[in-house]
Length: 72
Ligand code: 9UX
Figure 1 (cartoon, rainbow, N blue to C red):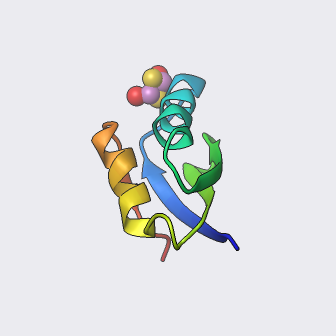
Figure 2: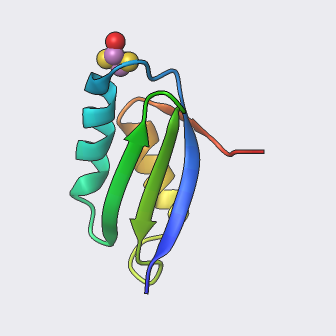
């Protein structure tokens, strides 16, 4: 069973950063898919909550050098 995590990634404006974020998350156990939209500044991550916490997914994006935020 998977859950979907949606969060904002602040300040991305090109495909290079999309690739960085997808690379940062793609290799993490428990992450099933990653979609990052430059236009919307938004990441959508499907993950298995028994394997990885949503918080750790966001931390991985921060560790890759990006600021994340919740949608209101
Ligand atoms: Mo593209 Mo990322 O100019 O910091 S490399 S948005």
